[in-house]
Every structure is written in C-alpha cells, then in structure tokens.
Image (cartoon, rainbow, N blue to C red; front, side, top):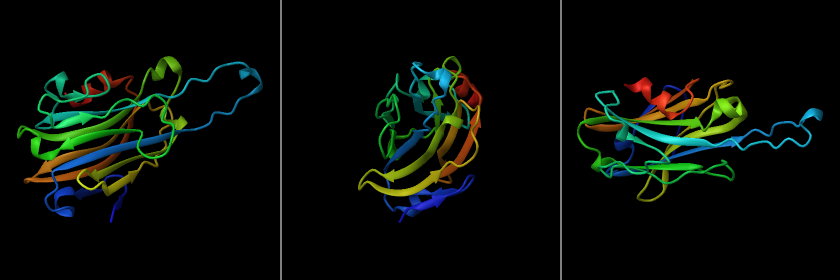
Length: 197
C-alpha cells in the first residue's frame, strides 16, 4: 500500500520493499486554464513546458555537470539514472515525466539524487508554478509497477519558476525518500543546479 507523504516527511524505500533494486520517480502536473479576457482575443497562449531532472550529489554537493540528468542528457554514465524523455505540455493523466533509478548501480560516492522540475523559458514566457496545479512526485517499485509513496505538492508556488520536489538518498546503507516541495525563482536548470554546488 502506498504511503501518502506531507512536506518534510521521509520514508525508507528499502524497508518498505525488501529486495528493492530499481525505482521510478514519476512526476506530474496539470496546467491551470488561464481565463481569456477581452484583450487577449486572438492571442495564442503558450503551453507550459515543465522539465523534470535528477541532480546526483556526492557528499551533498554537485561536483560535475554530467551528474545532472535531464531531457538533453538522458542517461548517467554509470547507467544508474535514466530520464525517460521530455513531455512538452503536461497533457494527460498520470506521470508526465519519469526518471528511473537503479539503486544497485548508483556508484558508492553518490549519496543523494535530487528530483527537480523547472519551467522551460519561464521568464521569457512569463510563466510560473502558480499556473500549475495537481503537481506530485511518486516513487514506484519498477519490478512490479507498485507505488511505494506519493507526495502531492500543495504550497503556493506563485512566481516560482522551479521546484525541488524531493530526493532519494542513502543513509546508513538504506535508501530513503524525502518530500521537499521547495519552490525557487531560479531561471532554468543551470541556475537551479548551482544551489547544490
């Protein structure tokens, strides 16, 4: 049975599932329908393109840009983390983007995998997470597609262009998940990644 998490809650993944070796981090969101006013007649509204990424940390720090897995760098050199591809609109039900983490393949020096979402060209398109609803992250056992835990983000993310959804981390040889839900005004993945350097 899936555990429903609140902001700041942690859950042990390997205790919940004996023999767990691979998880899927499914991230999802829906775009809020923006009301069209009289003066927006004929104006074309741009879809909000949210991008999920995984930032792999050594001793809590990002040491190499190649440790950032995203739509333009889909697989870590170790093979431990794989991004399943970019969803440009967030349309449809379920996960909008997925990141697969092979826990057994994560090299020993990495202790944390931070899962983030940023809005592509947010500043230029004047878009922010206040225009997004039903955002969530869930961790799924890849061997049988069973959801282990889910965190529905419920904070007010008005004017935030990126959100740190959560992190998969290793503590005392045990893999855990931490529900973070921290919004930031970082413009793009490069700026967001600098927080972890």
